[in-house]
Length: 442
Ligand SMILES: NC(=O)c1ccc[n+]([C@@H]2O[C@H](COP(=O)([O-])OP(=O)(O)OC[C@H]3O[C@@H](n4cnc5c(N)ncnc54)[C@H](O)[C@@H]3O)[C@@H](O)[C@H]2O)c1
Image 1 (tube, protein in one colour):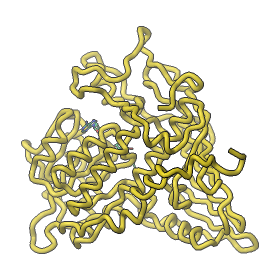
Image 2: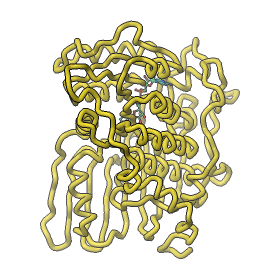
Image 3: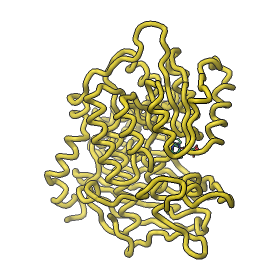
């Protein structure tokens, strides 16, 4: 392998097969026209929210604003407290008729099997907003139950989970189900307009990309004496790899998705540095607090990707493309700027919030009977982030073909409150953290 191009391995048949399975071509040709939901008449579009935390409450609110026929009729959460909090906050929204949050007592489901009860209820659409480790099983079950789905990113935390999501998605297409994934940046004009300009050649040939999700430290949900180990980990889910995928997968996936979108491709290999500088405490589970990954695409273009959750440092949530004729800089919460050499920079201010726009488009497609399925590119972006984590944890150069075929399943064998989670604290209460050079990538 030379310095500017990936190994020949990357052009293998398995990569082509994966691309075929996840490409826009598959998206365009594999879809059955969706069953429209109550396109006529006054009947409500009945929606269940599964995972009633911060984003779940936001997603349910977005759904209510997206279409006047939407009613939230079922809520499901592992725990009672967030369910009640979200129910109360939805009912208190000033711009939503409280009658549209119509969740009877027997449609409030609590526990690890709550999602199954919500799916068995009379809803048309489910919003899957629980921790990412549960996403493949919950998406699979939702498709089996014939529900239209909005689900948050990332769609999995390991390669077997990603493959399960893709397999379920083929069934979703055959059933004509509409599926939206929470990559809201895909629905922000500041992103789509400037990325179209990249594709049209405005900055010439792409030379390299940069991406950042550098923030301060995030929440911790402390252990309480009455909890089983499983209850503690599910509640404090962000800090466990089997539940969150680590913050490179949970959060930085937004930027990696944008970079894959800029490239119209996914990386073929990655090598990385990562570690845990400030999370040296049992409250923080097992995940890292920083990753720096060098991804390489088949064309030889490199993506320099950074994510960090350490307070009092330089922060950025942004993506950048550098080409032979100029560059594009996009702020996640701000503007995009197109800078072509010799021309005045063109600034595109942030428009409507993608969290709302994605659901406006999803429900419009549902009601109009239009195809809508965002899973293929989302699964590719999730897998890109998993590839980066594999490289960071192991310290090895990890190839896409090997990563997507990994058999390493992070989740537990049994999922009950009494069952043993896949990682356990040591005698000092601390969890083992992957050590580069020692940990296996797969
Ligand atoms: N698109 C975005 O901008 C965005 C922003 C924030 C979060 N998210 C995503 O949304 C998801 C949820 O994140 P959050 O910030 O709302 O977390 P959160 O902890 O606030 O909410 C998660 C909820 O899921 C519940 N839960 C846990 N296990 C469950 C299970 N098995 N079944 C049902 N419910 C279960 C938890 O009790 C909690 O109430 C994550 O995938 C996250 O990546 C996306």
